[in-house]
Image (cartoon, rainbow, N blue to C red):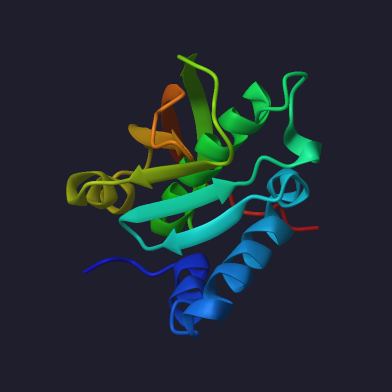
Length: 167
């Protein structure tokens, strides 16, 4: 049985909203906690414990000098999708930490981007069963033409949170 944490309980409630409200609500939740993602305008299209789909529009605030989505915004999108997914699955007693962000830029992106991160049942079980560990999360990023302008994978680790120091 999967361990529910506060984040996945909130997302479960938001996922029951009508489709037209779901993306704005999930995006607001994410952007309120991950300020840079909110500033960049990252949108949460789908969020479950197995899969996260996030997108970013090719808007002026995230463009590079050739009017495409900036390389850093592409990496932010991929890291956000993988990080949100990892956070959905960690028990409250554990802390997620990114160890490696691997991004290979293959070609110029056309328009906005969509990132899809997913976890296997075995990866999800490891979060619950191990006090500390690490997992590679592959993220597929596609542009409006359907091409993958980047290849990426994120190495996420987790450790047990330290108890707060009494004052």
